[in-house]
Length: 303
Length: 303
Image (cartoon, rainbow over all chains, first blue to last red):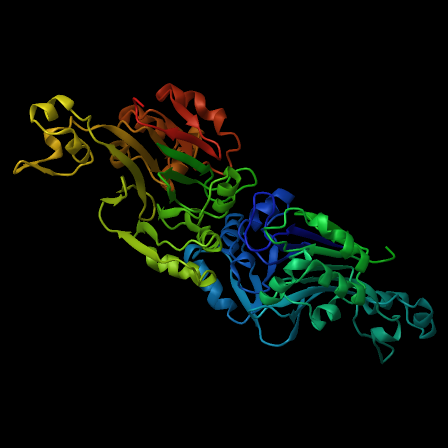
């Protein structure tokens, strides 16, 4: 099971009742944070989630509303006595930007490791999860992220029996290990069914619609996507500043067919995103005008 | 009249219901901000005050909880289309720290001017106001600030009449100008009474008690002072980390006699500052356990 929380839903600047867009995922004791704007740590505390177990921070890009909360977040993690290393993933320049911001957070009790993205698509395994960064289209280099939890196939008892394997060797095979029996090597694929559907969450903000978002949103359990403007007349503005309309996000979802679409990164000038949802839901019915703290527990389909 | 708002009252980290310590003063269309931690811009918006007219930002020191909100605040001022220059005042290193933080706020439509403090006490005139920075005692170089609005004496009609000055020359003299009349020069002191009590607000946080705070709190209309801990057993902690107990702030006030004392910069571990106020008020009765957004309009005494 993966817990997902959209800590905030704002773009540009934090507001009293709308924190900046940031997603947190918790899985098996690990936490992953995508973007960390000013006050993201407040949003996290309000939700009751903790900064200490954040093992990975992913940054879409380095506009202030996506990273201005970093120094405070790092210090809060340090105050919580985190000592395990923290992996940061982001576009080229990551280490330079983080080092500059750390002028006010120079001493931390944990190491920071950097993964600077250089390819259009990069997958970084993290425990059982795979974090895939994919390039999107903003006015600076910007990436979306897809978190994927793979799920092995079912163990095929009949196959194991047909091979004559003793029961005590079934478990290691099921866990992905090779085993030896009577001088022969047996591999997991000999006893496991085809991989089953895992869990996939895809996050894309500060971008025009792209084929990459559609690709990584394909059959996702959840697509979290920018929907900065709802009003038709903001379309030129969206194009100029490389942002996305709510209905454009819905069109991506209509093609990629995620289970649901959460809109986020609302313009500060749009007080009530819900007001603009009717035409959006005509394009993709299962669209949510997400609110700060919106969360979901995503489990495997048949569990 | 000066409007004062203590935008937040927290120390170390922002909390869902307690923003970081920051004071804003408004006078005659100008605004002055003292400290700007993460989410100070949210606190300001919640109060309904605007970032655009901030002409001066004063920083006590460069620990993150006093400056982490700077990049976002600058961008918000830029988005509001501020074009007038902004003066920043702070301890040595100001320009270096601000330049580093501006890695995520590189483009602004206004100029920033820097005044780096090097002396134990420095006064910077700003319009009718005088901003005085005075050194306090923290584990890094740290300053308190006193905002003072001077008030000229009363115009002495009898003196002006005795000098035989025509009525049309009274006003320029009252406004502080010299005038010429029948070949003679007349100066304001010839017709003005002794200066009257002006308005004084003093702000000191992240410091042990110092003589300088007492000096600048002397007869102030308002002293805003750190009271990080209320519990007796936190005294060693306060001394070690160069912070101040609530009762120590009250002792300063008892000697300096400001009209009132507002405590601020509470430890995140102290949820209810009011719980600790009884012994504090025994030392200085007019002590307020200030809350976020606490504000006051300070006028001249007899107006």
